[in-house]
Image (tube, rainbow, N blue to C red):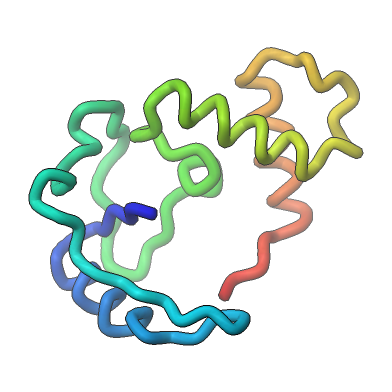
Length: 114
């Protein structure tokens, strides 16, 4: 997975924190992305101001980052829709409606942080 950080210091802190950490029996291997992947999100959409230290992105941005290319966004919508199928009255809703329902669901039932 690729993760975009607010700044270089936040990225360094995350690498130091996560590299080698055991999660449910798996050892995490964390490293800098190769140069060819640096700054890739500029090819897609990036909305809103930069975050300040200690500030989290809005929930909808965490679930459906603006930097996702359209096909990845469709896949994310499908994954989340399947996870909350019991609350989707009509699974064939418009994508923006599904995104709103998914966001409302996770506001009421927060995801577990690891």
